[in-house]
Image (tube, rainbow, N blue to C red; front, side, top):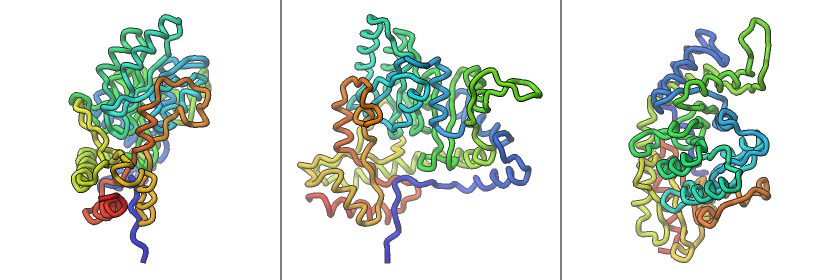
Amino acid sequence: MTTPRIYLSAPHMGGEELGFVNEAFETNWLSSVGPNLDAFEREIGERVGGHCAALASGTAAMHLGLRALGVGPGDDVLCPTLTFVASANPIVYLGARPVFVDSERESWNLDAALVAQHLEDAAKRGRLPKAVVVVHLFGQSADLDALEAACARFDVPILEDAAEALGTLYRGVQVGVRGRVGALSFNGNKIITTTGGGALVSRDEAIVQKTRFWATQARDPSIAYEHSELGYNYRMSNVLAGIGRGQLRVLDERVRQRRAIAFHYRDALADVDGLELMPQADWGLHTNWLSVFTVDPDRVGCDRTALIEALAAENIEARPVWKPMHTQALFADAPVLGGEVADDCFARGICLPSSSFLTDGDLSRVVDVIRERARR
């Protein structure tokens, strides 16, 4: 008999979602307007300390956030190279050019020293970037104080890509609205989900109002269908917002569960020499959205690919960390600052199953396969 599959990061319902969804059906609020949508935006805004526009995806939030910052054809936008492609694609949607930046070791996030040096050099050339995308990778915050200091010196705005980081704290405060705009994701693999969806968040209410306008095809106030700006079909539905409302009620529990899973792996595999949990920077609360480890092949006895293959043979899903953007064929012509840290993280990084509902038995299966494959 085939053993049940253990997925990398699967949805985990809390129990209240169906009530909000049923209410949407019973009241016939099924499109991109309705009470759930209004309430979800308000509740997300309260959680992050700003305002919220609920959208079809985190990528849509990135796209509209960059547009709100004035990014357009020919502009440069700094972006981490160690990230998912959705952090970079919206830059290209707007005709701008991504300039990829390496990570620092402490959190694997954007290296503030490289950003500061580039901004200084760019100012001398008269070509400052239009914005800096700061990703909070795998649920760990970037060093926002250092990055803000670098950007403020040249008045370059920050867009926080917090798609992987709802529940993540930087110096005790939820990430997402320290920059001018932020993007969240509620994809099915995220710490909470609306099955598909995202949100743009900001302390600037005018930006959020403009985002809602663009996201509903930029229809001007009129009884007729009149349009003076380019718009998109990017709004979240009232049904999906109902799922999100239920999920928000268990967010803190999901953070605790994800962190517990990461630390379980760390402790259970502590005697496997050369296998180490991703650094936990001391400036914030890392949600460990994914349990990420590095593999030293010389000490473990195999590389991360061999571990992934061994887990796959036992019907367990594991993945490498994000492949750096500067190594992708799509961005072969894009400039990159550094890259060695990101390359190393990719070469040695493995993401282990992290679904918040994993049982002790599930975790033991993962640990046993790793121990069996590694040199003990």
